Amino acid sequence: MTLAKQPVLVVGSVAIDWIITPTDEREESVGGAATYFSMAASYFSPVRLVGVVGQDFPDTAINDLRGAGVDLDGLEVQQDGLTFRWKGRYHEGMNDRDTLETHLNCFEQFSPKLPAAYRDSSVLFLANIQPKLQIDVLEQVERPKIVGLDTMNLWIDIAHDELLEALRRVDVLLINREEALQLSAKNNVAAAAREIQKFGPKWLVIKQGEYGALLFEPGGSVFAAPAMPLENVVDPTGAGDSFAGGFMGSLAHSGELSSTAVRTAVLWGSAMASFCVQGFSYDRLTGLPRDAVTSRHAEFVQMMALDRGR
Image (cartoon, rainbow, N blue to C red):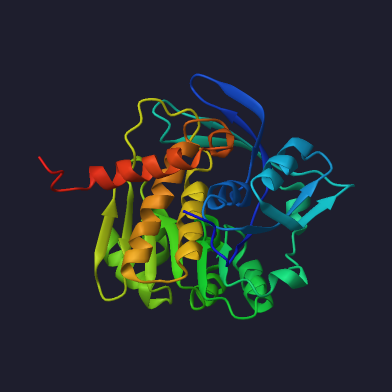
């Protein structure tokens, strides 16, 4: 797979995390939705990143992103500020976590301003930020061909009307099961999906962690993809954002929203998420050989095959 001509633009958080798992701990773990997204998407398409960090953001992370070919002209560095920081503890099994500390720092006043060269981006991903900011970004991009969006329970609760306004202008929504139920006010995933599609996004991806992902398509078709069964999960942080990076990067590579292209993107997203959880931060998303990425994708295809030629 070679990089597509059309870049994917991502707008979202860049952070420093303090991660505690049942077996390990990392105090200065670079994270943030836009970071994970960019590292995963870079295997499929050029990436443009818009975000904000403080003077404490490590130069090594800047070098890693640039080394992956990520365009950082849209990353604002506030020399008198501190980077968004989050501290969390995972429970046994890694399915649940507690937020111990959140310090928005310079991210609290984040107001995305796209460089002029970014405004012609044909593929746009609005990571989990305030819906008002997502709308502001949509106003700055000229004629995007494919727009994806992520959100969270907080915005569904406190910025519901603005979120619905943003959803009317996107093609794909990527959320988890709990968010889908809350947003739709339904009590099962299938009913939730149909309700959410009425809000605007014709394509809906519902992420289910270790149980995989469901894709609800225009017209009623459903595609189910498994998660990779892994014996050792090191750090689940960023798995959903890495999924989004692989997913949107694949769409940028294909340049279309056909059923085949979107289903293929789900598998690429699943592959990148499976790499992410095998290390802290974006450790496993750095410097992956091309054949390792394609082999992981092939494993997903084989898991779903009815006939393996036996």
